Length: 212
Image 1 (cartoon, one colour):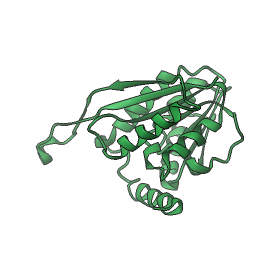
Image 2 (cartoon, helix red, strand yellow):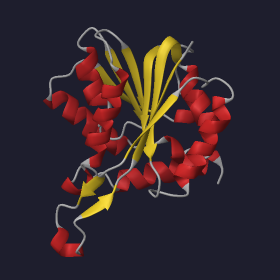
Image 3 (cartoon, rainbow, N blue to C red):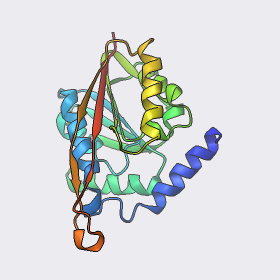
């Protein structure tokens, strides 16, 4: 699949799913988005870029963490999901956050512009994941952090396997010294009577790297 086709397919898919994106069955977005942000230990006044931001699961807690003197920019291909995110930010009175249409492979930002860059459950959708990781790393300032969260073992294969192959390649280069932490868990099904399934396995891995 060529790059333009991948972006168009992702945008179409998530626009179509926007009506149920934040349903009770999908609360894992908010759960893991917030946990990713907590691992960054964001400071008031920092500048954050959230890529593949969806409906704001990680961008909104990041905006809360950096406070009014900080800023958060969310980037996503789905305009409908960004509309949801803008509505949430407005409802919470957050004025230090904005959402822009954009592609992780062609981020419209200068080098070394952000104190922290976040990508939760998004990088494995890129048609070229090593390029995607380098694109995210490019806009992290020296001393800044890159946080990528992906599904763990036995979840969403083969995409997660391809992601870790990309990370291993990058760890020989700019991402040396990063750390990865696995978290095992389950995600409850809100209506088990309909399917007979009470919960599904939801293992995740948090990868964090600091730029020299």
